[in-house]
Length: 216
Image 1: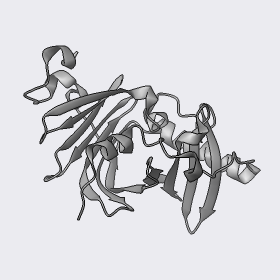
Image 2: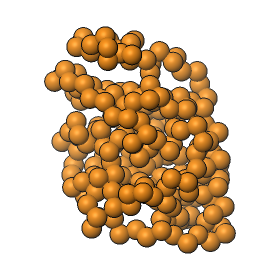
Image 3: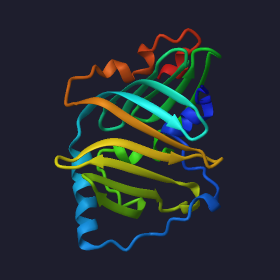
Image 4: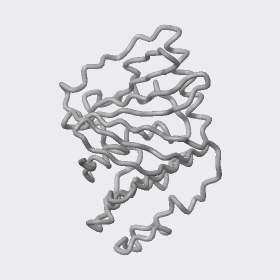
C-alpha cells in the first residue's frame, strides 16, 4: 500500500488547491434560503470550536493510505502526527505551517494564510468571505459544503462533510495538482479538551536538525 508523499502531505494541510483548471468544474452557487441557512450553521459551528483532538484516516484515490492524530487549537494552531512508518509531522504555530520529514531530516515552511484550510482555524470563520461556496447538499443526515478560493478559482476545491443533528465535522475531501482525490476522516474526535500550547511551539519540537533561528 502506498504512503502519501511529502508533497501530498503539504497539500493535505497546505497547497491542496493546485488542481489544474480542467479538474475544477464547479461554478459559484446561487444558494437557496435553506442552503444559505446550512452554510450559516456550519460557520457558527466551526467558529465555536475551541480545541479538537482526533485520530484520523487519510485515503487517496491513488491508493495512498495513512493514519495519525490531529490536534487543533483555534485560532491558528494545529498539529498532524502521522503514525510510523510515515515520517511526517506538520505543525502550525499560528503564523506558519512547518512540515518535517523525520526520515529525510528536512524541514519546510508555508505561510498559514496561504493554505486552503486556513478558513477552518482562523478566528472568524466566514465561508462566503474570501471563499466561494460552489455546492451545498443535505441528505441522509449529512451536510456537504464545497468551497474554493475566490481570488484563484482555478486552483481547486475543498469539500467539508458534516454529520447533522447535531452538526459535527467528520471529513474533508481535496484534489491535488494531478487530480488525485484525498479524503481525511476524523475518528472519535474530542472537542473542548485542554491541549498544551507547547505542542505548537517550534522551539519545543524535538527535531535535531531544526536550527535555533527556525524555532522563533
